[in-house]
Length: 394
Image (tube, rainbow, N blue to C red; front, side, top):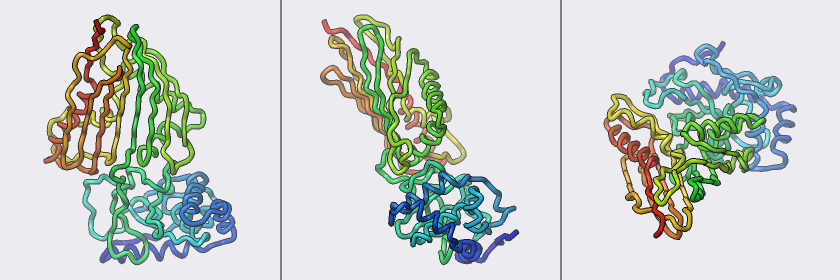
């Protein structure tokens, strides 16, 4: 067993790790053949994507404790032959396959421990996971993450200190979720009839870490049972009655594209019919779910962890021809150092529109800033429960 001990600085750690891994990346005919087959004629960034996805599909990920196992990986050829490996082994394999296609890549050390735990001094055992860094395209790739495309990292890897093997002088950082990108968006087109029944076509679109999580949690099994059970559990646990069906899935396996679900549901007793109807929108939306854990406590004495990115919930509720809302809630906006929340209400031509948008820019909220996070969470959750009074035109 080879173990890297405490070093004088991060450059020494990066150099020692490079010496351990570089000699395990000698190219063999099997590695060259596999790389060419995986690339399938592609070059550049497209070749990176194809080879990366080949490793994701064909190398089973296992977990080891590097404090016990050490950082010297098996040879890339042996990992290829076994078809399984920890992040160190599979990262070394991916580097070798990319090298066989003339693409430079290096393994990179990170830690997926709690974000608010400070790094120690230059210590190799500060790390517990290995990524692959492709300098030409500034890409970090996680071979253990089956459903990650080349354009986004799972949240556990994003915005982390990282040490690239070789001549790195210090820690750098993996990319955080891109500002302005929408990780999760749900658009619900609802129609309310006079009997109090709501029918809806809902389109859920997820990208970045949202797409990774949706594919992993809902779409991972080929039978579709997990997706069906998850959708139904989410629907009925919110107190709804009626039916919900999955009509279409777009880009399920195209990991570099947003994944999209089309859902069709019917709520049989959304409101009590009459000349006046009191209505609460049937589904609380993703924003309320994400913020609910910050509602019960007004203060905290420890940091809180967020998911940086943007979530949008959009509702278009088409009312019966002779119904209209009496009053609409006021638009609300909350801004804080770590993000913002906005909800807007609009009615025109028989359609009530509700747009909610949550933008978070940090992973960590300190205990000093937590009261603002609590206030934002209260606003978001309360907005998901807003009631509307509808009146029949005279």
